[in-house]
Length: 290
Image (cartoon, rainbow, N blue to C red):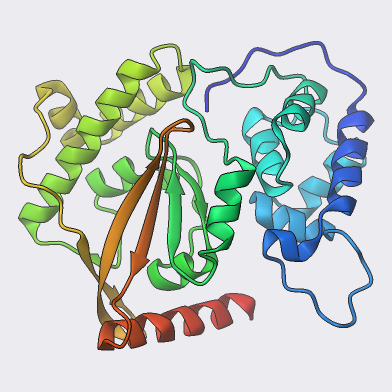
């Protein structure tokens, strides 16, 4: 997301009071938070919203109490996504934070309520969502159980192009040729995104950081070579540390109007891979809950 221009600030407590009021109205089950029989709070607890938004509970406390006065645009977007805000309220939250809401000339990271409903129906299936620059927007619990937790990823770690060209650890099994072709496709797709959003300063910064930090990326970017002619495989093998190798169908769906990439991992019912996937999800989600 680009660094939007700053607007005139309102009182810092107004942003926090608004977040707190909207947090209180969100039904936990509507955003995938399990509800126990002893629960007293009707809305989201502070730590629950913080976890959904990927920020610390302490920082959210300071925001709500007006002691943190300059939330970044990334934090505002994360909070609006976690609160499932409609467009008008999302824009208001940006204004209360002193930012202009992102326009059509920047890479969107907005997940609309309708896409959220789609993702809710896949709550037991590994799903990950990237923006058009291949920066992670959302990964559900089954995805983290399958691939490893993404919640601690920060900065470039959240970008799939960087994770591949820098050869960061992954559970996906690729041959050297498959890995090289996958990297070439990602860089080619990022080049198309850069041509669609030339005014996005954060996207330009991302490309500069990738070029400076990865000789492999710089080589592919400068060569401006087309992506490999061979179609990527719809199958991926994941080497899971607890259940062993799992070969899954991997389908990426593009949300055209919002320019998002939603990747879904499934297995044919009744197969050994389906049983291993189910076990990996159970083991992983139990571990994260603990």
